Structures are given as C-alpha cells and as structure tokens.
Image 1: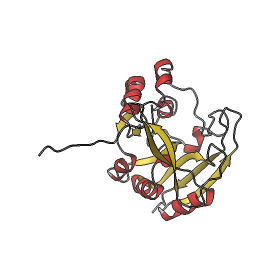
Image 2: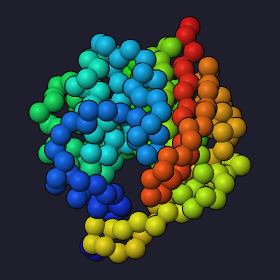
Image 3: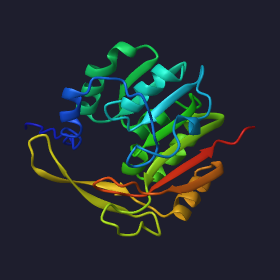
Image 4: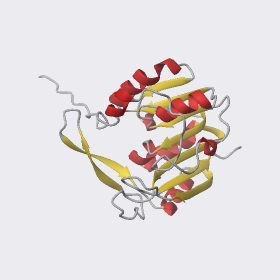
Length: 233
C-alpha cells in the first residue's frame, strides 16, 4: 500500500514578495504602530546591547535586521514557520550572520525547545497574532530568562472596524496557497483586558497593554502594544 504524505500549504508564500524584489535595504527605523509611521520604536524593548533576542513570526526579517544593525544585540533569532518567508529573509539578510540568525520553525515549537534562552522576545503583528495565545504565551514565558521581556503589537480591532473579541476567539482570514487557491488562516484580535488576562495566566507580571491611535493610511487601524515580564526569582 502506498502511503500518501500531505503537507500544510505555505499560506505566507505570496506575502511581501513584490517588496522583497525591489527593497533590499536594512530598514532605518522600527515603529510598533500598524502604519509603522508614528508612535514608539525599539526603545520599548529596552537596551538590547549584548542581549539574546527573538522575533516571533519575523517574516522577511526586516525588523530583526534593523535591530541587528542598529542596536547591538548579541544575537537575534528571526523565527518564522513559512519556507517562503525564510527564503526571502535569507536572500535579503544572510550576510548579517552571526548576529542575525534566521530560523525556519514554528514559534511555539522553537520556544519550547529553548527554555530560558532569551532576554527579549517580540512579535510585530507576527506570531502573537496568528498563533493561539494559550499555547504561545506560556511557551514564551518559559523561553525567557528571569526578568526577561515580551513585547508585541497587534490589532486593536478588525481592519473592517469591527470591535475586537471579548474572549479568546480566533477569526478566519482569507489567504492563498502557493498555487493561488483560496485558503483560510486564523488571527486573534482580542480586547485589551483579554490580553491582560491570558498574559497573567501564562505567568507574566508587570503587564501593560496600551492603545496606539490609527494613522491616516489606506487601511487605518489602531494598535495594541503589549509588554510583560517573566518574574525574577
């Protein structure tokens, strides 16, 4: 009998491809807001000098590349499960090794495999948006060193303007397979108090979730900026 092996299609295959072909530069700035124009920047992460950092859901690793070049971490792991995104990141920024380390892996699996490995973890509309937070956040807490810091930006409401969810419920988001067929992925768009509750349940302390106002772009959206710490002994 022949065994048929199926693989999950890469639903991020098409994302950012046009930009990657034209924009090869390391970004000169890093902003947390949805429009990436205003509001706080890398200072929210704290002093990264000599620190070990991971970008969860790094995509083409543009933010990770900025931090590697401009903020002197010991190492930053740009973690993304998508083969296409990992390939684009490699084409763009492989020359920034060893300070920038490009990792193709599921974020939860990577964090569980590296307990106590990181000083700082962050997600810029990345894995925190597209992974069940009841799995990701406890794994993140375990992967941080004592007093380590988690920072993430996520949507404060749906892009349609619909309010965020009052509980831990994912929304279906349309996507495309590499062949262009319609598919579905899931995104967690949650209210502030929900993020605060599940961060607390995951073992974090010093939890803060603030709203950054929407800009004036073509799809304006307010941002939630969350910060939390793994307790020190």
